[in-house]
Amino acid sequence: MNKKISKKTTHGLKGEITIPSDKSISHRAAILCTLAQGTSHIKNYSKGEDPHTTLNICKLLGIEYKYKDNEIEIKSKGHLKSDAEILYCGNSGTTMRLMSGILACQNFKSILTGDESLSKRPMKRIIEPLTLMGATINSMDNHAPLEIIGQNLHGITYRSKLASAQVKSTVLLAGLLSEGKTIYTEPYLSRNHTELMLEYMGANINTNGRTNTITKSELMPQTIEIPGDISSAAYFMAAAAITPNSNIIIKNVGLNPTRTGIIDILRNMQADIEIIDERTISNERVGDIRVRTSELKSCEISGETIPRLIDEIPIISVIATQANGTTIIKDATDLRNKESDRITSIVKELKKLGANIEERADGIIIEGKTKLQGNTEVTTYSDHRLAMSLYIAGLICEDEILIKDFDWVNISFPEFESLFENLNK
Ligand code: S3P
Image 1 (cartoon, helix red, strand yellow):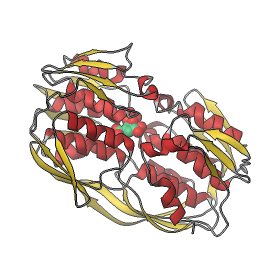
Image 2 (cartoon, rainbow, N blue to C red; image 1 turned 90 degrees about the vertical axis):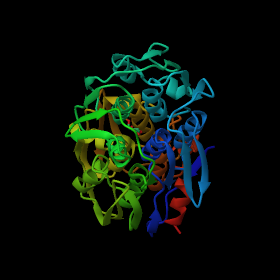
Image 3 (spheres, rainbow, N blue to C red; image 1 turned 60 degrees about the vertical axis):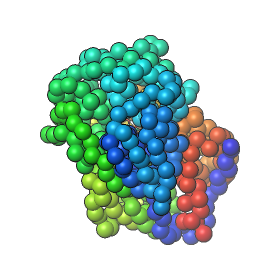
Image 4 (spheres, rainbow, N blue to C red; image 1 turned 60 degrees about the horizontal axis):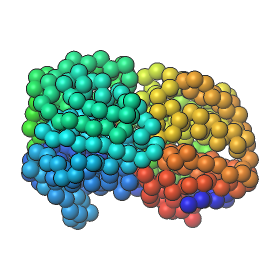
């Protein structure tokens, strides 16, 4: 589906929206409730395609689930069975990687497949540590499909070169089901939802800075309430910050400090942003965010901040076109391994709109402030975050733009456009 976007009226974005459920936390809730013997409840599970891919695989592995009063009730025997040897992970790297950690420890064989984009994404990062734990994984030169011959694994001590929550979670989940102790250290802190949820469900896990230690444990069924996704909220924060005369409140947003890099950076850029009513739900920080339009200045983003806003770099690039000065994003090479090569894709598409933006091997340089032009077609590279970032860029282009294949948005955020309409009445 192609989508035409044109500049919105100058009365700005106004009002209140509740942001839909966090994708990362949804995946983890489905997976951990599958491992917990008994009945668990998940409130506010994501409607995105990726989390539903995970839920479907959990069903093939033996759980029963049903929707009850706007929550999912999951009944699990606590151990997995293999109904289908081939498990399709669609577009979802989180599904393929986290599931690999669990499937490597089962007494059956599984084959994980994915769509064209997922089949190009690197899997060596999980095959390597799982193999050290004793796993047998056959791949197409470290890419999907992955044939996983389940067996008993043993703990390892592993220092990852990547600050990747997916890799960390894969190893910790395998550690949960393996003999002995698994100690995992990462170079910078990546999102820690897996650790928090494991702790919430009674796992024997200990966190000390960038190191997690886990030993084999039984999980207890739980009620998990999932907060709104800060990575989805980021598009609304950006839109309000750069669309003149805006003033919005985004409700129920996850504020886990490993995810709030976008708020810190917007503050550095002198955005008018305020957190209201911060609270803790199911072991995660949550709150409401108010954003008003303001004059922005450029910023530098590197090092340990990168994993805290890894999925927000395309939308930050859009914001930076409207900030005075030179924004420098570096140490972000792993962006090339996402649903698309997000360095090349955002640079190419924003250039078409007249942005002063350049690609670097490990990041992006953006010179602002530039009037974006429009009157052109842009493309999403089959990447939901590109689709949403280009939509926001379209709101401030002088002329209409056409976004090709906009429906990739459904991967994480099917409610995206209707929520926008609510703020633009
Ligand atoms: C995710 C972690 C991040 C992020 C992805 C979701 C997760 O990937 O880009 O969208 O749910 O663990 P990496 O941690 O591999 O960088």
